[in-house]
Image (cartoon, rainbow, N blue to C red; front, side, top):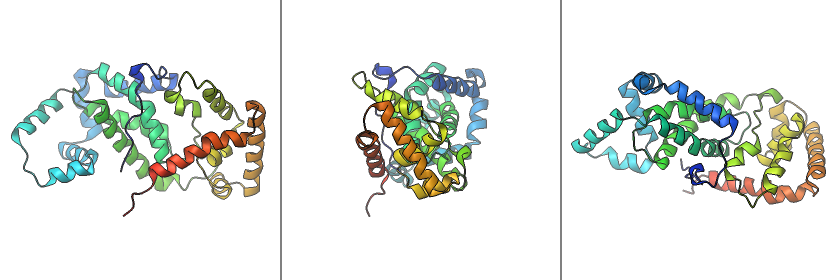
Length: 278
């Protein structure tokens, strides 16, 4: 699976400080991994035995790397270096840095890949960090960490897909805050952008759910109604109400805002997630 690399890093000063929810998740992940003294036990618990760990490593490798490595004899020097890396896990401070830099990006990319509000993106993202961070070697780059995190988070979501796609009802829709999803992309010259997303986040629950699924996810009325367990006419009424409220809040026709943001995002997502032509 081809996943886009991180678009930005909060450590360069362009992005905002981590949100309260991110900080809390970082603390939970750090607690789950324990201190250096108990790290080996935590790795065993999170990653399984050595055979299982080898399978996880193979799964995390890119297809090209795996193909090149499949037929080659293992170089003893490289093997010794790998064992040394495993013996020197990433430090606690580096884990926190990776959490701050990469959590928003992994969360965003995971929702892009599984644009279904029934998919528990926050849980799968947090679980990926819990599983991956303890096993990372010292000196790991942001890109290497990101690749492993995305592989793990994507696999968790894919494994759960047969279950969550059968869910029905408003209570099963985990509507993410658009301000949270896009917060790491906010720029100083885009002051209108957070306020517009805040208006969407501020819609009443039912209107917000329907608007999110249709305008942001790109779902049809029929698909939205089926997932929520309501009629298509009810979904249409809720969408109309949401548009009216957003137009009043934004002071501009909501169709203009949808054309300039939501439709662009749907087109980008469909392009990025399209299967390569054979």
